[in-house]
Structure formats: structure tokens, C-alpha cells
Image (cartoon, rainbow, N blue to C red; front, side, top):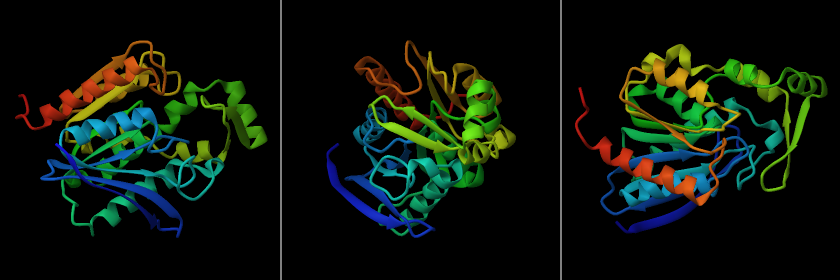
Length: 264
């Protein structure tokens, strides 16, 4: 399947801030998918590109974007990032898409980490619009995130009002304590019964941010068709060629299965 069109747009969100959106369409598309990065991420990260490319290879129109308040092409600063702001951007992207000729419902949502909880929240709010979900290395709830962090680091973050760390790329990152206060508002387990579509869960064996144990809680709570894969040796973000190849293979098989009758 050859790409028919690849276009970048800059649209305004509900707060008048610019969001960078990449639209990649196929001739005779099989469907539509929105792919969302995680906290401080962007649409060009290798693990995000793996998801995008898997859907493109299977003939889907793929919409990816940089949220505001991340390290990408959109407006804002990472230190102001919240789940609320990332989720609002997802809603705004989809609302904009409704006026485009390639828009189609129901559609698929895929996201990594904070992007994962955002796609889950959207599916709970608009269940009839969703065909399938792929929340990868996903945040499950603010409370689980809070419990997962060391108490001394949490207290330091709360006391100083800002967390500073160096990312994998060597870039120094900063995040306000208000991010954690906002995160504590969210818990996809509260309305997990609203998710009635096939769900793909993938997590790294050594993920210390959204660990395997959190994903098991979500997997056991889900009542819809579901898959759960643990990537050996992987951390929160998948980086090695072997990990990325494994994830792509999982995605391709999952996408192919979406067209088959549901097993009883």
C-alpha cells in the first residue's frame, strides 16, 4: 500500500496555542487511527514511529501530533505539562479532524504512557467513536503513579515545586509539582466497563514508571477482547532495534486480527 499524501498542519487548540499535526493518508484507506506520544515526547520518537508505520503498512490513515507543553513543534513548555492539557489536545485534534475529508468513525486510538491514559479516557468519554485501543506503557491512574514513586523524591518535588532530570537524549527536563496534583485526578479503572472494544497492552519488563503490575491490574479489569505483551529487557520507553521490531510485529498481527470475527 503506497502513501497517497503526507501533510503537516498547524492548528489552534481551545486555548489558541499551535499544535503540529501530521496527516498521512492511504489510497483506499482501511480506517483511521490517531497516535499519541507520552510526557515530554513527540511524534518522531522511534517507538511512536513504529506504531505509525505499522498502521500505515496496513493501509490506515494515520494522524500523529505533538501536544502543547512537550519537546516538539507545538507551543508551550514541558514544565507546564499535565494530563489535562495533553488530553484536551487529543480532543481538539479529533474535533478538527471531523471536518476533514479523510475522517471516519469508528477509529483506533494508540498512545504511549501519558498518551496511553489519554486514549483510554477518550474511549471512556466517547465509546461509540472507538474501534480499538492500544495504550502502550500506559499510565493507569494518578494514585498508582503516586504510590510507585519513592516518598523522598515525591517530598522533594512537592517542597521545591519543580522536578529536574536529564532525559535519555541528554536534555535537561523540568516539570512542575502541579503535574502530579493534576495526575491524581485521573483513574481509568473507575469506568473501565465503558471500554467495549479490543485493547492491546504492551509494557517493558523493566518499566519502573508504569510497571508490569499496573498493567496486570488494568488487563484483569478489562472485560473486552484484550491482549497483553511484556517486552523482555525493555524499560518504559522502547529503544533497541530488537524491542522496536518486536513491538511492530505485535502491532501488525493485532491490526490484522481486528478485521477477523471476535472469538467467543
